[in-house]
Length: 200
Picture 1 (cartoon, one colour):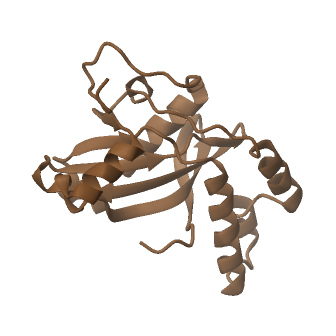
Picture 2 (cartoon, rainbow, N blue to C red):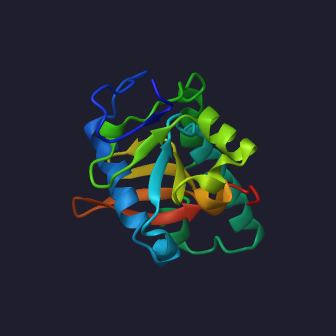
């Protein structure tokens, strides 16, 4: 099978379990919100490629902790709303999350995971080949999206890590963060971003 899955393919390679209903809603809500931002206006006509192998959910915890350390070092964490709305996990909850993720299996994204946007799914190995050989120069304009499965904290909070790159430049960085998705009045919204400490 071709390493890129097109939307009209009948056969979809399913290497792991499907997303739960809640995970599916969070992922699709995130993409709906994120890709409509001003940052992406120059990419509105680009094809969207999702990298098949998901980012690990542990990345969300690492980003959260890095961002918390930075926040404290700048003496910004001095308001009650900071801990209630942004840095709401205590050390016990963090350690429990880490323990639960020790044997985390990489999820493999499928076309059926994406409800509201047209995407193709490409293996990470194929993306690396395209970049290393310079083949991206002759390909249609596209953005590449790395996603983690949502890390569900509780019924109202979830983390999602992402990395979005400009495929026209191989995979030139556009944006990469962990986002806090919070359920408010029955709808999931972006309510905080955690930098992962990695340079573009």
